[in-house]
Image (cartoon, rainbow, N blue to C red; front, side, top):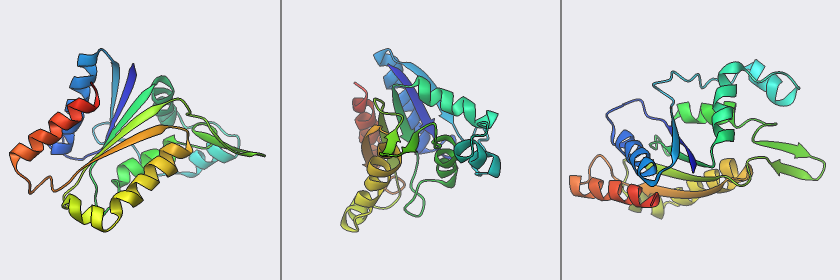
Length: 190
């Protein structure tokens, strides 16, 4: 399988990075062809600019820095997103990636009969470690909200079938639990 891993965390020594490394190792072990996008180490520019809008909605050219990322998505059969939750949301870096890369005319387009999801047939895993206990996010319906954003909103809107995995209380849980999280990650890609 052609597998694109999109990683977003500013700390290359973070547990989030350990998860991304586990995804990479499991995918390579399975025999996947893998590409990794590390938004912070690549100094991705997350700021949506007017030329981006011109390319999306006004028939202009896609900016060259975005074309490469779109080419990777086009290449991929499966995409895995690995990022932490900050204030109940994805990092701004990843939000900017979605804003700029999952553009109208590339990931979706509006037609007279509705929305044409242009990435249909692709699948994705979204793996989200976070600091709060899982019980808090479950009890407050945050997991439901986040699932709607990705499954029904961003990725689902573009036609990508999505599976989401949450890992709670990462900074305060035991090493044993974090090892279980890594094993669970590995098992997603068997």
